[in-house]
Amino acid sequence: MTKIQPVNGHALIKLEKDTEEKKVGGIIIPKTAEEKLNQGIIAGLAAGATDELAVGDRVIYKEFSGTRIKHEGEEYLIIPVDDILAKFVEVDEI
Image 1: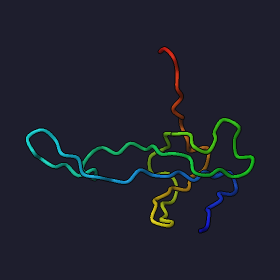
Image 2 (image 1 turned 30 degrees about the vertical axis):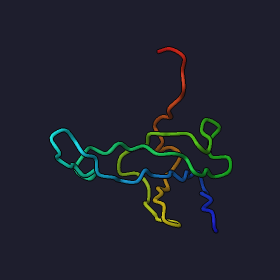
Image 3 (image 1 turned 60 degrees about the vertical axis):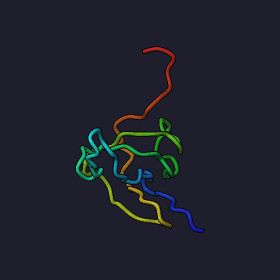
């Protein structure tokens, strides 16, 4: 088993797999036809890339950013850390 280690200020984002979802009335809408959210989970970070993010954080990134790759059956995106716009955080109240 090999691991991908981002370098030069990049992050490795694990993408969620596309699945079909059955809607009311039995109509099946493939995920490719729905609006795609640009989000994923950080699977790796370049050393010293940022102090604000950590492996395991769910993040939102810029559309059309990075390079898609497949590794050991999983889909990933390698993007510059600067293209990460936000991360999801747990809060008690809004």
